[in-house]
Every structure is written in structure tokens, then in C-alpha cells.
Length: 338
Ligand code: NAD
Ligand code: UDP
Image (tube, rainbow, N blue to C red; front, side, top):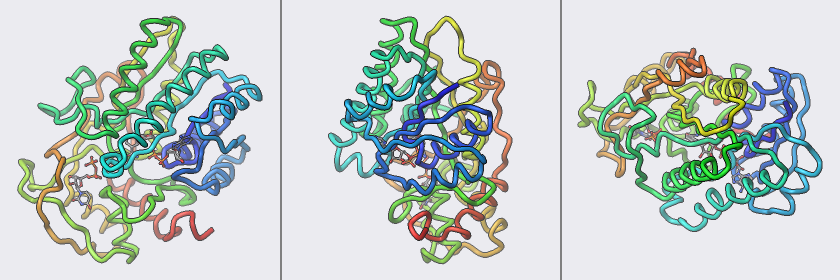
């Protein structure tokens, strides 16, 4: 298949490109490089031993996007392109709605005009809002607590409307839980701009000496050790989930929604200890108050994706930390010092 990967230079996109190339697919990446480096793509090619096509295009630029569709006939689109910083989305909601929501409208319009009606979309467990109970199945009620999450929810609703009006579209919505880790080569990984917001990259930067200590946001949650519990999933498992979705597409069209997680929750202290083992060093930490907007526990019910796609996460927390540490220690400044 020839696949357009929007946002393919980013963290999850780059790992997915490796899997797509390794499975023999032809890959065309469009990325504005708003939050990534083209170096990631040269490394993807190195790992896979195959080339891809890259066009630096913002999906909001319709003419530029059309020129990519003129150049290549696509079988399918995997749509990663989007901004993802929750705090920034609260500060700049219109920027997020334009980039994520309007960008997706633009992409869908171009796809329709070129009769490319197959998309795999990156959604997030954030659409479950404050879930009533765990594990969280796909049919749980949905809500958003910030503009980033609302942009994902709005896109999901729009995709549902599109498929109802145009039953020949084939769309998979994948709701990611907490992607972490890196490719085992240590060549590609997560490269957050500035101080990381998320737990694993923050711990990795403490381990490598760029940050002094981990701030643990609350030890008074209703969880076994009092710290927040999340469903961390290795980014390579996540990437493979996209291939499973592509390869099991139904002829009939429609919209499918799947959780991508391990189905197991890990606490902040469990992640910290696993990382200490992987990096063979202590991670200093301090317990602070709860972070606004956090929930106690969030982990996936993965029975639907296992049953219907035959996909199951394979890496455990130790492997996630070992791979995150290899990437961080080999690339202490991410792609910026290449
Ligand atoms: P990322 O920032 O590393 O990758 C996103 C890529 O999209 C970047 O390379 C960025 O330059 C590009 N991009 C952004 N706006 C664009 C535009 N208008 N046109 C073209 N390219 C654009 O993020 P990621 O972690 O790889 O996330 C990929 C997708 O998965 C995003 O849609 C994100 O919201 C979603 N997601 C991520 C997580 C996570 O924790 N990483 C969790 C759930 C969902
Ligand atoms: N967390 C923490 N310190 C940090 C970052 C995160 O204690 O510096 C906690 C956070 O409160 C949550 C868990 O780690 O319980 C995962 O947070 P992350 O931001 O990685 O994911 P999300 O909360 O978005 O699922």
C-alpha cells in the first residue's frame, strides 16, 4: 500500500513509519515540522533500510496538500498531525482548534476530492474525561476537560458524521493511552520541546542529569500507593496497532473505534522504580500536591481491540524504561544537537 502519514516526523509517527516501511509499504510523510525534526526521518530510513518521501507541508495549506495528492496516489492516510500540549491548548484555544480541527477538515476535503476514503486517526484516552470506572471500554461516555481534548472529541464526532453521510469511507479511530519508550535502536524517540509535561520523559531527563528531581503530583490518590495510575504503552506496540488497523480494514466501510493500551495500570512510583532499574541510578523525587485536572486512575479495557484486530501489547514496563533510557542517554539533547 502507498500510505500518507501526516505528522510522520513526530514521536509516534516516526515509529509507525519504521513499521510501515519494514512491512513493505510505501510511505509519504507530510509534516510542518512544528514540533519535530526532519532528522527523525533520516533515522527512520536508517532503521528500516528503505527510503520514504517527505514533503514539508502544513495540512492547513490546502494547495500544498493537494500538490502532494497530485504527486502520489494514496491507498490510505494515517493522520497523526496535530498539536498536543494540554497547557498550551488552554492558553491558545483557537490555535489548537484551527490546527487540529480545521487541519483535519482540510485533509478530509482533499481526501474526498481525490477519492481517498481510508483514514486511521490518532485520538486519545483524554476523550474519556473523568471516567467513572476502570478499565475503560470504548463505549464509555465521552467528555473533554481542555481544548486539546475537545479538539480530539470534535474530530471524532465529525468523523462519525462523515461516515454516516458517506458510507464508503473507512475510518479507524485509535484512542491511545500513555505512549512511552523508544525504538530499541536508540535512534528515534520522544523529543519534547522545553521541560517535559509527561512523566516518562521527565524522569528520563532527571536520570540523564538535565533536571534535578521528579515532582510527584500527589501521594493521596485512591490508588494502591497513593500516586496516579496510568496505562503506559510502548510506542512500538502502538505503531504496530496502526498496521493491524490498516491490514484488517473491512470492504464495507464504516467507523471503528479502538483503545490502544496494555490494559494494566502503573503508578508514578512504579514507573520511577522501573526507570531506576533500567538506568542503574537513583531518581531523586519530591512529593508535591495534586496537579490540576489529573485523575486517580486511567487504564484501558483492551478486549475489543484484541478480539477484532488481533492486536495485543507485548512490551512490559521494564522494556519501556530500558528503551526510553537508551534513547535519552544516547541523545541527551534529542535531535537538536545532530
Ligand atoms: P508529535 O508532536 O511528536 O507529532 C505530531 C507531528 O505533527 C509533529 O511532527 C508536528 O510537527 C506535526 N504537525 C502538527 N501540526 C501540523 C500541521 N498543521 N501540519 C503538518 N504537520 C503538523 O506528537 P505525537 O506524540 O507523535 O502525537 C501524534 C498524534 O497522537 C497527535 O495527534 C497527538 O495528539 C496524538 N496523541 C498523542 C499522545 C501522546 O501522549 N504522545 C497521546 C494520545 C494521542
Ligand atoms: N506526573 C508526576 N510528575 C510529573 C509528570 C506526571 O507525578 O512530572 C504524574 C501525573 O500526575 C499522572 C502520571 O504521572 O498521575 C502520568 O502523567 P502524564 O502527564 O505523563 O500523563 P497523563 O496524566 O496525561 O495521562
